[in-house]
Image (cartoon, rainbow, N blue to C red):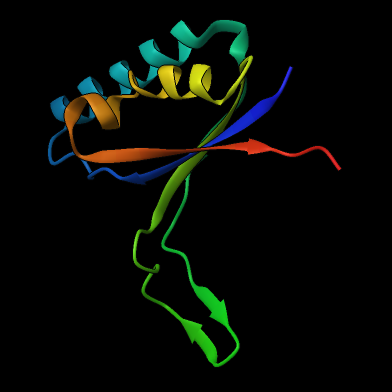
Length: 104
């Protein structure tokens, strides 16, 4: 079955412990709901650097990556349907880029 990377963009750092608990519970519930489709839970990532022919930018780029996961789905539309319930999307503070991982 094809695998897809979920590249998370956006999101915000919770301001209180109560908010952090609520956010973590939402993520845990969503990931548990993915069941066997969740191949690699992934992790949040720190601020990225962009390497290009004229140097390195320390600003994270135009749409900084904030984390990733890998799922299995029959096709990209099914993977996108899984991503629609991601807490970042539901809360309106981020987005999920969905791309098929091409076997080489």
